[in-house]
Length: 299
Image 1 (cartoon, rainbow, N blue to C red):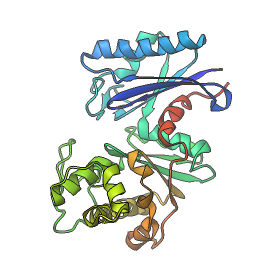
Image 2: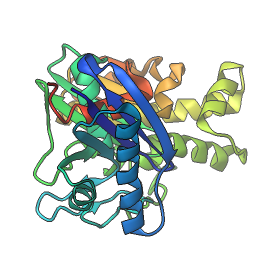
Image 3: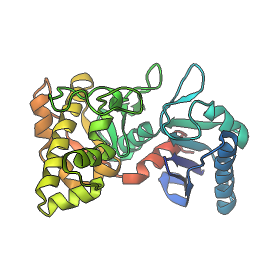
Image 4: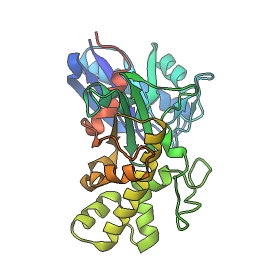
């Protein structure tokens, strides 16, 4: 049986067809549909039809998206900078395809994939954080995704950074309308913005990490500030959830220095004076699309 997973990103969208055992059968990528909503939904439906034609098989479709779908209204909220925000996206996509589609937050898809057979496999409670353009997270407990009353469990990035210093307060303004959100301190975008504020240099997160590795003192200082902020943010997770493991996905997960001394820093802030293991996602960028396909059972 074929299962399709779709990863709806801010700039690109990918569909992957998986066979038994999540063996990859087909992968297609397009720019994320933008502009007029109805046309964007049709474009997504056409992507599924194209994949099925090329494969010569059909199957159930799971989709990972930013934001959350309100269980009471079916409306997608907080899907920043997409054509699908504030719309009944799930119902409209199902109508366009003529069949049920299962949708889930992209961080939840990461958590599901990594808990099943990734870096979180074998752990009871898995907290999976995405550190990329933004900062989100999903929680899996004993193999089951924790969604919450409003489908917002794990929305860690829109809490305030704990234990702010005088220099940090009140924090950068977030697109959610508040100031000082964790996302504005620990995401890859935030790391680059912090470096620019302090040094006047415009560099992306990967460049900052490479320069720090080569000995650049300003870039090393930027990574040190980020490490302390990430430790404070994850210490709150330890206090509230007490996970068995923290899995990190997104662009920053590939920065090896991110993990150096991080657990000790978390332990210094957490009430337990201890930290769970903090590890990169085993499936990397593929975790989101794998988790989307896993919204349907195999067979």
